Image (tube, rainbow, N blue to C red; front, top):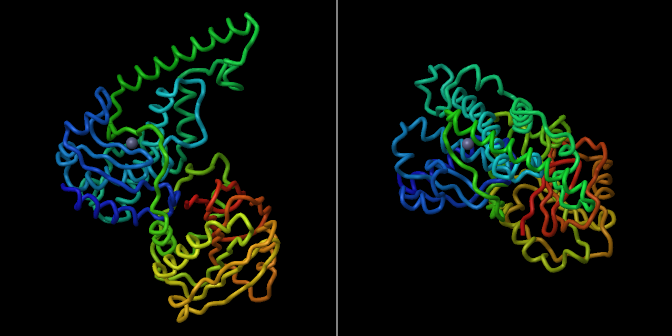
Length: 404
Ligand SMILES: [Zn+2]
């Protein structure tokens, strides 16, 4: 399989998983010879495939050795690692060394991922036997695997970890004993670290010995993400039916589930979005990025079909509200935005939701710079995406992405 074939396959397969953490995709992929692969991932790490936040890498010998349905399964598998946020998730188990945590987290993700691959395979070939499906798992589809169907990876992790051994009690609270100052504390810390190290080593050994029947892939150290966000957003928006979009904003409220941890529902596709509310933050701090922002919006409008767009310029409340009908959208120009002092997106959103012509099933896109309080409280918005031109956005609703 060459680079182009693989690239096309990835694009195709990515569209089948529209309901995942939408902006965690890596943008680059490389097919490497075994020798090249070994330079990046030195043995004894598995020499098969891997992904970091920057790229997917595949060992060409390995991928060529698989039958086509398993190749697809493997590629999906890596995409899903990307979508689940690798292990760069805020959750890190400090009772283990980072490398042991990484190993265990990878196994936990694998169980979740292979279940999703199994579901997608089933959906693709509903009447076929498992061995005749066009997309196949690299794990055996048996009770061990199916047990975890519907779980998120943190739940799987917690179970694997609980079965491993009891956590030394004090590690529950603080992972790093470095801040202790008395001798006694220091001794205590040392003892606890020793216990954690031993536990780590034991898990490493256990994982090696169990010779996990999975893909034997790896998740590489986290790095700065490069995200083809316009493309991804466009395919996300158009590939998700209204019914499914409704679950976006609720997803985070499920117990255990935070960014990157939820289990996707598999969805169909739709051609156009009926109604989009696009909120544009016009506060002073957005000034430097206005041109980029305007270009991004125009790009987006050329990529996705929108039947009706409402642009809402806001700072503390709505400054201007413009309705653009489908036939005018492609020729529409963003005008220069006049910025005020502070910002409060909640006020602007409330105002829209209270208006008489409010469209309940609309998609909300908010372009902002991260300097606001983005908690919306108990609003009932079906789908909301924050696009930040500044710092990360913490909100109790929707999905966020940094676009700069
Ligand atoms: Zn994996």
